[in-house]
Image 1 (tube, rainbow, N blue to C red):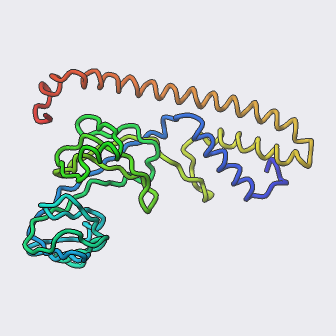
Image 2 (cartoon, helix red, strand yellow; image 1 turned 90 degrees about the vertical axis):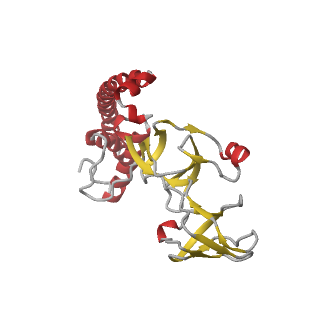
Image 3 (cartoon, one colour; image 1 turned 90 degrees about the horizontal axis):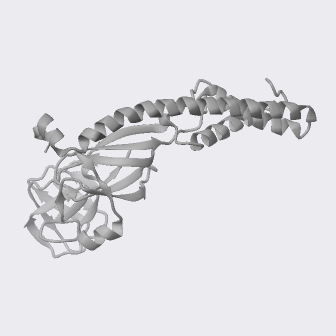
Length: 281
């Protein structure tokens, strides 16, 4: 209403552009989030029949489920492993690529998962923890020490692997998880544009409005110079509101850091956990 010359669609574009720009302008405390993922224990029940050059695998005494699609299959005596592309039944799976080993029946095997997708909003990962923080590695370094991914155990390392088919961040966990472990991770979350009238931003609305108003006045001033003085006033108002918002956010983050620092001081003393929770080690 302050700039009637501009249509609603253009204003919405200004609002969303400024919204994303403001979210990127600093590491706001309200963008911090956390989530957990639970690893999958290897499945090794029963035996399998495999055929060289075929993608079909038949099980005996197996109870395979559709949840195993995307996991890895390996005949126990071999190093190479294959992604499972389909589960036909409790005793039938299909590999993404043809099996390259020798044909055989009554073979021991393993179905395991070492690659996991994080939550949809996870953007910049800050930490990944199982008991203690996992250390970041590269795929090349893991390939040098365990190219066949035969090491199993509790999570120690993680590797960024880009996005999955849904656009979610993927990580590889090493060693291959030997059980169902609950892994905690913290991150800065991505935020979608506002598209509906009742969508609520996670940043101060008056800050977005002040920023978008600058764009509206600048746009309108191309044809009406009467908006130029208003543009200057809008900039000053935006600066004042943003400084206030940043100050509020700094106070919130300072309070959070005080709590975290107390926790970390206890975490640094190994005897703390032994004294307070012997079952954790």
